[in-house]
Amino acid sequence: MLMSLTCLNGCIFLRSKLHPGQRCLSRLYNSASGSLMLEDQVFDESPKFEPNAVVDFGVTRSVPRVPTTGSELFPLVGKVFKSLNFRVAREKRFGSWVESHGFSHSINCFRIIIHIFALAGMRLEVFTLLRDIVEFCNESEYDAFELFSALLDSPHHLERSAIVFDVLMKVFASNSMLENAFNVFVNAKHVGLESDIMSCNFLLKCLVEENRVDFVRPFFEELKDSGPSPNIYTYTIMMNFYCRGGPGWDVNIRRATEILGKIYSSGQRPTVVTYRSYIHGLCKVGSLDVAFKLICNLSYRNKPLNSHCFNAIIRGFCIRGAVQKAFEVLEKMKISGVVPDAYSYSILIDALCKEGDVEKSLVLMEEMERYQIKPSVVIYTSLIHGLCKRGLMECAIDVFNGIGASGCEYDQTVYETLIDGFCMDGDKNSATKLLQEMIINNLVHTTFGFRFLIRGFYKLGHYDKAFEVFNIMLRDGISPDTIACNYVLNGYCRDGRLEEALKLLEELSDHGVTLNSHSYNAIMYRLCKESYPERALELLPRMLKRNTVPGVVNYSTLISGFFKQLNFRKSVMLFTRMVKIRHITYIAK
Image: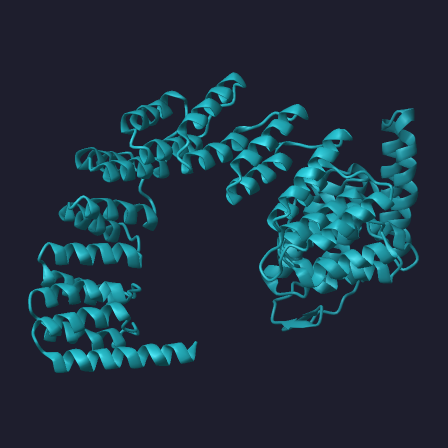
């Protein structure tokens, strides 16, 4: 009775404060929320408490219960109903209410509050409250599948739960609880509620992004067969699913084509994203000519296209080596009124530079300047690579120096490209200087970056520098890869420091660094060269102990070492073993 009076007073207060245009909304609150709170929602005023155990959602947990009455939750519900103030609803988190009032009373209270906000169309508030409950269930190991029945309003007024379950589906999907979200969709349909297509699209998109092939197709078929009817966004999500492929499944261009046909037959209009996904799919399966014809047809019919549609085809032709065809696509792009972007030029410049056609690359750079398109550091890197390949080191240096002036930031790759150019040109001093500059500018953060430095110094013959970089790598806790280790081991051997190489070999193995046959071969080769083939042979059992299978390169080194010592018996024995192992390996394959 007290609750009824509170609600009635709240309604009178709200009506007096609203101007006439808002009173229809007030009537909605009065009728819908009034019935929500008085007709169907019932609190157990004298609950039975179990002191040692709580059973919720079929899960038994030892949780201390505080003997309170459900009536303590009524004031909160009343405040929310009267004010629709979200701050009031968020005075206390769901978990805190459970600690002080128990789960059953807390979920009843929050269910009413959630439905109040849902009836008022306040979806964001509903989302926040439901997320709070879902997070509590996850942390407390409650069965979140049971939330559907716990949040159901009334069997006599199912329509009032529609918004709540649409939002609950989104909460589950956004938390990567995709089975739970799908379960909400199925249960809602079972009780006669049809979910909103936008909520279904959100779930479908999440399923695609998580590569849940087992759910994507059945869910889409269910939407087609029994609703809600798919819209253009639903079809576009499925188009993306079939065209991008993923772990465990390939691009299915036949299915994608069927989707495009369904869009046309349903009278809906494909978006630019729909066409982009389909064109990407065609390019991935190698149907570049088909994609180009399609884009020409779409352009003629004034259909929506963007640079991504054209770039996919340009890239496909460049990968195939058909650069001239890629230029045709670029020209068609301009004629269609789609302005090429930095990526369009980046693809072409990279392809031209790899072919050594620096002149055309520079023409494209001038064209970019006319269109006021700022080159990226990737474009500069491709140009430097092309210039180095042609031996035009002075031009490459000019381009490198101009990167900073253009407003781009230097990255690790552009340094590595120019350093490789200096190494190919035999300019060790410039390469070393640039390597040191790279370290000073803190452009070495990863295993790959350190490996590049080690390789650079190794190729330049500066073994001490390579060892120094390797030690910095270990000091900073960056685990070296096999290639970096092999360069260092080779460096020690070339520098005549065999004992240090052997010691490092053991340390690397003890620390779990993966080594291969070439790691051991560097030391074997040096031992054999210094006329110690017997010591080199001792490395074979050590390799096997470390689960590294000796390869042909190891046996060849040992055979050559013993042959030079005129120990033909050992040479023949090792050759026979090598042939036998190769035969066994071949049979095993």
